[in-house]
Length: 593
Image (tube, rainbow, N blue to C red; front, side, top):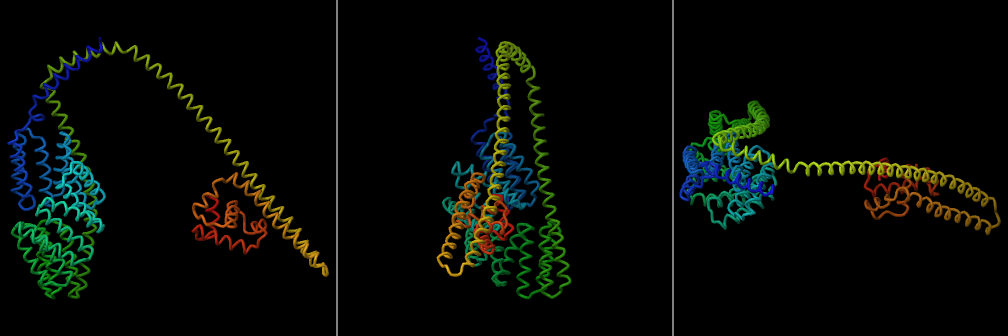
């Protein structure tokens, strides 16, 4: 009866709660198809312009966000923040780009959007790659790839392949980068998207350039340029001119490189893209140096330096100092060449430290952003709760009374179960303690047995030594006796036979007895030896077991009836087969097996 009452109460409470929450237009609004289409169209316009026209791109994104908020389209709001991250990425404002990316992530998590989270990881990988965190970038791209492979989204899979090619290129994994880029190209050709095909062709050109395959690099750059001209994509046409110019400079064709760089520079000026202008001017300076037009080379560097200072881009300034150094080296002014190289080195080190600080600041920003979002969410929830305070308060009283009755009903059975559980736990603890004590006793007994066997083995070795010394004395005496007998050849042969029999029998019997005891103590020793080298001879195995007992060459010679030089030869062969560098290492190695 109580259970039935509880079920009815929960159903009533849940129904009331859902009806209350549905009154919120922000969380559960269902935008019309027409509104969604308008938002997507605005976002596409913003995306198409994000690399070329910062102001117009943001204008379209702002309009899309306004419409998303009016229609309660939460995913649209997240997409707007995600696209802003792209815009600021192209503006080289990477900190702001990261802020918008994290903001988009929060929105996607709020609505459990897998596709949104996949986009977040794509953006994160792009920024990690920029900061030089290549392993983190690859992990981020792979997380995005998992989602798109699950849904067989060819377009996004091809995009991620391009990014994976780029990061592997930065890591100098040229073959891996080339494989990813070719995979991306195959997919993009299926989609027949000429714009992204041109980007992939350009990436393949970069890979071949880094592999010092200038002919191949030129081939793919020209293919990319041809497509971009058909698309009339000015920014990317300028990029293709720049890429080809670098190839021609490396091929020592500075005239062709200069013409292309002047075209590229003109386009970047019209687009008001300072970074593009700087990199073109620096490469143009290299072309002028190759043409021995030193004054023009210097003027190009000075223009690049001026723009870099204006936009306060230290990475570009670093490249300017490096080109200044190259220019002064060319005109044999080594004092200034050294001066600018020093400036380059200082700025390079400074940028490295700034990058570390930036990564730390990014982490701090992520933490603060999460903290701020949590506070906003709590404040929002508090406001909503205040609006429904009277209804929820009444409902809470009913629920509390019902729960109190049910708790009282279940209290006795629950306390009994807890008592039984406690008793079982105590018994388990006792059993566990006894089990541990038993294990400790067994370990102690095993240790004592091992010590006893070691003592027995040591005793055997001592006996071997004593027995062999005694047999050695007998053999020596027989040999002396043999030398005293002059005329009886039969007697000499019989004595020599006795000597050989003593040596043979003593060697076999004593070794068999020793080996049996040795294996009882070190049962796995031979198996471990054979795993290292299965081609060990019986004499080498015997030598290894005696060395494991830390016996000297003299002692081993006494036991085995061999000379010390023979023992050293066997030790040398054993050490070589085990791959060890010195004799001292052989003994310590065997004692550890």
